[in-house]
Image (cartoon, rainbow, N blue to C red; front, side):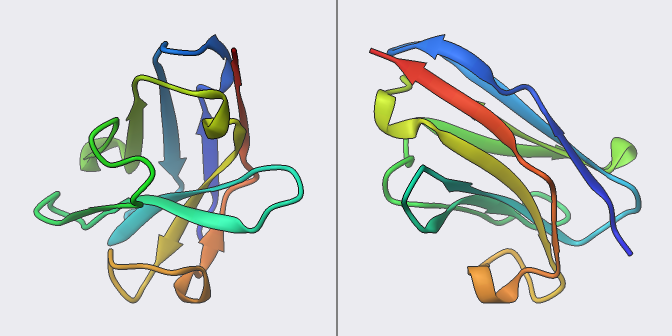
Length: 120
């Protein structure tokens, strides 16, 4: 069993930045972020493999978000910049044993989520 704990969500103005963190209870290979806005499906945001050699991003966040990890802390981070109200969502940390190129069906563990709200 892997427990994931997200932190760093909050309220930010459009154009601002925010950094999310996710700590896992054990060392895991591929970790990532998904998000779900009210009334919408949960979408892929970003993912990273164990060594950080491979990172993947959803089209809507490419060039604005950066995923990174610290294996000494079993943690990943999501640096979000140039935020827009369309980025408002609950952000979920995820673990996949199938690799960093992950889809919702590949997720083995989910965090509880952290709310990000971007005001216009």
